Image (cartoon, rainbow, N blue to C red; front, top):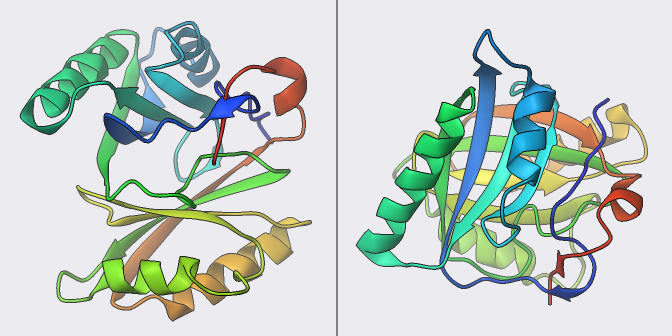
Length: 205
């Protein structure tokens, strides 16, 4: 299980300003490795790369990106950033995070990190379902965060669990409550040594 080495966990409030994107690295060029690509991402300004880690599962690595700009200019800056990341060997897909709110995915990294991409049918009201989920008096077991995003995948769900089997059960239970689920895709990382390796950074406020 790869170690989760988060850029941006622990001291300052999570920055929900600007334009955010989730980067899913499916594979890398023949001249590098996922570990090397993640290492290069962590060398970048932490205001741009909020998180980067290798994963086990349906994608080899993941990064949470951010630029200061919004709107059309923000999309352009994200494109520039992603082109630079492709230049270091990443072969990836990404989704732009929409409706950035508290309890989004990849704000923090407790223990086992489970990231599940979910495709939702266009006629399903996923925004309403997300709001209902995070406004509960008691959040679902294993729930960490959920974000909406543009692109091939509609939702990024972050969960956790004491074991892989428990984590799978937690994912299935939450996904079963979402409307219009077409398919899912999941990957795992360990966050146990995050604070030791990256003491600086951001937590959800």
